[in-house]
Amino acid sequence: MSQSRRPGYPARTKPELTGGRIWPWALVAAIVVLAVYRLTLTPDLTWANAATDGGELITASVTLGVPHPPGYPTYVLLGKLFSFLPVGSVAFRYNLFSAVCAAAAAGLLAATYYRFWSPRVRPVAATAAALAFAFLPLVWSQAVVAEVYSLNLLMLALFLLTWSRRGRALHTGLWLGLAITTHLSSALMLPAAFISSGRQGSRLAAGVALGLAPLLLLPWLASGNSPVVWGRPDTVGGWWWLVSGRLYAANLQFPTGVRLLALLQALAIGPALVAGRRLTALRPTIQRIDWAATGPRAGLMGGTAALYVVFAAAYATPDAAVLLLPALMLLALLLVPALERLGVAALLLPLALAIAGYPDRTTDDAIRPRLLAEAVLEAAPADALILAPGDRTIFTLWYFQHVEGRRPDLRLVDASLFAFDWYRARLAALNPDLYVPAADDLTALQRLNETERPFCTASLVGQPQPLPAAHLLDQSSGARASLLNCSEARH
Figure 1 (cartoon, helix red, strand yellow):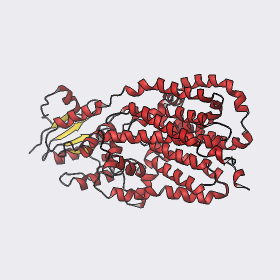
Figure 2: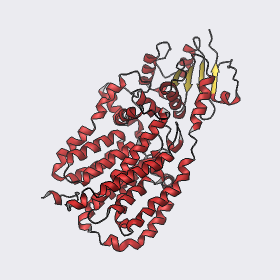
Figure 3: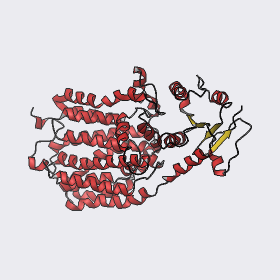
Figure 4: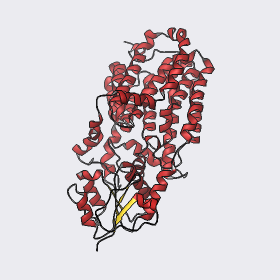
């Protein structure tokens, strides 16, 4: 079977239709998207847009550690490069990292969409679809905060681009493997990739294995002095526990109607339905598409998008909607034939999305985590041990202490991670002056250390947990007292 007829690959087209014509459009798309993202970029550490992991990811990257499963080594290493940029706060640089990745993904998607449908569509239709994807509320929300999803979209865009160029199974597998290291859900692309690879399945598998290589760096990252190292990646069992994401297996549950409605709300599906009704007049154009040639490939993309939807619906977490981002990327690809009939007017769709979404992206409480963290760090007694329950609190305090160098005299303890023996072992190794019990016993942690230093609980969200101690330190501010609860050292 000739390469041009292999299932899942585009038919061969004339060089002038798949050559350089699309790249100026792709470059302009990336520049426009980055410019708009820059106007709405979050200036500091934030909890907005479900980015509560931002403090942990930034701290792990700056200190070359291992964040929560699967460890995200590709994000850690590439983010470290962005941390050296001499602009804004370190948190801003990681927000910019997300914006650059998402904008680059938009440019690559313009080229990918065009190559996928060429010669049946013009560059303007492919570019309009890519821009529309970039300005969808869910995509935009992740492009302006420190999270892993924009980098994942960039890797998936590179995967789709090489997939659309026929016969580059090794390169296709490489980008797909790297995408999996940026988010495990990218493994949902594997069925379509292998179906489309035909006789080149072994080359694809080799490429995927090569792309997964950054996961082998986790033991090295864990060997440093970073305060953020999950699990024991220096052992085979610990490494597999980390990269397999076994910790989150319990989140997979049978989808409920309430969860499905929440996903639709997060997608802002209403404007999309209105646009869909407007596009019904384009049926003649859609019918002229050669579905005998494009149908199998479009079916693979549609089926993969459905897999992402099912996965997001079954993942019982408040931020499960972000798992739909790759599905939106694939659905935007299927939108291209409908936009072809509009010509240059197709660009009105992303323009409308940008205008509608701009106010929502500029109303952000980015300064709030800094103000709350500074209140706690300024009020904490010297050399205190601070017990911090909840991801928002501990991740934020980690960032300000280990990235910005605030209050290095304090000892921060994650009340949730304390249940893991690997966390207690690392806490003891990094803080030899602390008495860390071998068992999961926070009461013993307080008892063993309060004779040497003040013991505090802190919460940037709600009230801190009460202490059994009889004497509480006097706080100069009622607001600070609501964030920090300390007992005096009992000498």
